[in-house]
Image (cartoon, rainbow, N blue to C red; front, side):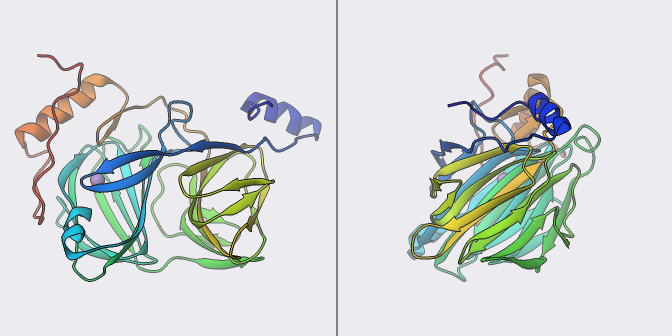
Length: 313
Ligand code: MN
């Protein structure tokens, strides 16, 4: 079985009018711990570092929390650089605080978008307001044009929503058909929540690569079954994709996509950079608590980790 065609193949085939969509490529997410919380990490993978500018994708829950466990879903103050955090709440509630002074609860159906630029610190705490917890957190790599720029924060309490056959699609970032998210974009990328109650065909852009994770239920795409804990990579060169719920008649998924990210990134811990030296410098500043990374209030302590393995001075 062949993997997805290269972008060169797609261009050549498209020019000849014989483009066939690439095969769906399914990989397992890996289990990771964020504080005390177990998550399914779909990106990055060794074989798949980015999808468009999306470089990180964690799916946590659904969980019903005991009061003790609820404290464990919070994460104390920690730094970021060179990326945007995209937090999408399916059920539950979190309180976001950051070094810009933002203090923003986020609830089901809402989006938080934090741009780190040269540096930002944030914390996400349990609010005590909900025992149900089901979220997706993603990172978007910032392009060189903005990655050294100022930090920023946006909250979107309502997002554009539309019906596509048997699906309700909510556009978190980017554009789907006539629907356009108000959220900031520094690159040409897309994030869509798809709530399936029947077969649905979504329009896609052939110059973008796409992937999806299932957040509940299971669905079928081109005869392949996708469940939570998988990343289904759809490749480049598709102008649509058809999804159908495979059990219980319902499924929910997050579709991400974008123009392939043109810059080679280096990621370590909470930083996205181009060189190890940039990461070393940022991490020394966080560890020293310089003004680049001011600590913010939180019910959890600041998060510290040892220096990167190459920083042996
Ligand atoms: Mn974070």
